[in-house]
Amino acid sequence: MPKPIFFLFIAICPELVFGQNQLVGNFNTDTNPFDYQLVYMKVDSIITNGIKNNAFPGAQVLVAKNDSILFHEAFGFHTYDSVQPVGLDDLYDLASVTKITGPLPAIMKLVGESKLDLDVPFSTYWKPWKRRKDKKDITLREILTHQAGLEPYIVFLNETLKKNGRFKSRFLRKSRSNRFDKQAFGNIYAKSRFDRKMYRMINRSKVSEEKRYRYSGLTFLIFPKIITDLTGVPYEKYIEDNFYKPIGAGTLGFLPSTKNFPNRIVPTEMDTLYRHTLTQGWVHDENASLLGGISGNAGLFGTAEDLAKIMQLYTRYGEYRGNQILPEAVVKEFIKVQYKENDNRRGLGFDKPLLGNDTLALKDAYPAPEVSAESFGHSGFTGTFVWADPENQLVYIFLSNRVYPTREHRALYDMNIRSAVQQVFYKALQL
Image 1 (cartoon, one colour):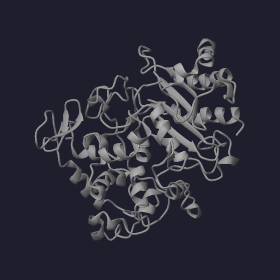
Image 2 (cartoon, rainbow, N blue to C red; image 1 turned 135 degrees about the vertical axis):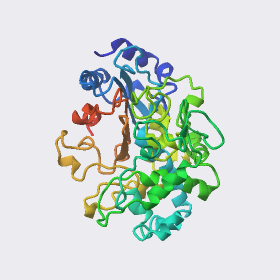
Image 3 (cartoon, rainbow, N blue to C red; image 1 turned 90 degrees about the horizontal axis):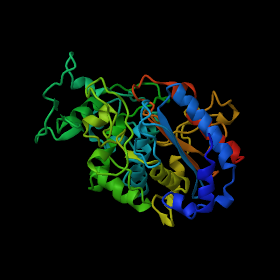
């Protein structure tokens, strides 16, 4: 149902409601370019239908255009027991959205500083690959576009568990020590040097001889080490100091359970693999958890508003509030399709619309058919989705916990909910 009382209030006194939600400039309801109540009703209908079909217990949607938030609403609850309503300042496990909001801006900055080159062998920076015949010539450009033929994923958790599901004590313990200081969960600690085992397994993994689009997150487990080595600053501190602090994205970061945020943290899965309880406040992704929750493939948490800020940074080609945080030319290169001739839609790290997306019906499109070819973003396994459209100066954030209570819930995909909601705004704005 629409919210006429709320809408009347923001029209009278927008600064009270949106004072903390402004990206740049002031929100002005007089210039809001669509019928808010009508749009709300359409979005509410799509999301309520999703909740009824167990796509997720709750979600929130934020849309910003030309530096101002036009729409930010929460729907449903944290869980299906309908106890805790979704809040606009809730923290979400961003899953693979981490890839474009964690290591990727650092990689862009290092490319701009000529500390990384997209077209020299990646083994220039990751020395073990010099000794791997199938990897020594792979470039960073190929890796970031998922054109390198790397294995999609390695389940490192399998290395840490016995056949009966119990911990292998050489890898996992239930108490912290000098040799087990990577906190994977509240009472689970991974071996301090488990990252080295990960690296060895990645180094030995197979590479497809056929160079075609094949999504792989393996190198995003390596990128934090490379970023630290090239900058001399720990990966987590580097991205916080160079990106999150300058744009005022105070909730973006790892290990939110250790930071005493007043924000509620949305739960993810009832884990039956090795945590055997509800995962909340700790990263859902098992590989990231074995690294102590700080990784390049997953692990970031944040609010919708702070995600909108970093996506706006990209929409404005690296500029935020008059500061050029990332080189404009580098951002423009990263958001371009790189291997169109190979039927690969990807940019450098960023996902892009399907090739020919504007000719497709909504049910076949990714994301909404109306997005511009210049637009880009990324999705996350937990049910998150971010998309930026520089041509239309539009940022779209969709956050949910579709893996609650189990990752087997796939209605979010089957019903194409995120694209359907996105389309509502393009049609309302007549873009």
